[in-house]
Image (tube, rainbow, N blue to C red; front, top):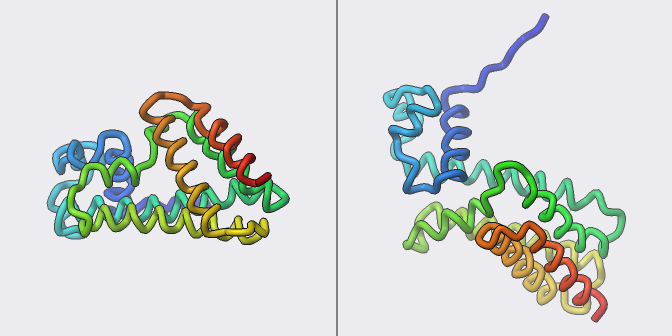
Length: 187
């Protein structure tokens, strides 16, 4: 027996919203576009979500969970702590070359929202905090003399590489960041 599981209306809306926001940004993703692209009637959408902002926040929250799980899984393929730290940048290089790469959804959307207490900005901040905590975890495993400082440096290198890749179209930016990280590890 072949049972197909179809996504719920809520899942469909969130998946579509995430894709549209990543492609176009929050402000360019209006309800009309969401209705048209998702195939879900506006009335049905409003049964699950009270505002477009709520949809955006929930879509970004789902992306955060999925992206961090993917990133950690890929980075952990390296056998040693030092290699995992350097693998942060190898994984980013592969992501930059993937179809549809449009930079970091969290950097992009945070740039669209002025209010630091807006849910979208808070989700972006939380995402970056998780990335910093993961870098710290790797730095502690590595036995860095100052794991906090090294983790902060790695976060700046990662976000800098992501931004350069997106803005400048330099898909090798993570390789440059990897070389800097290598130098930091040999200090």
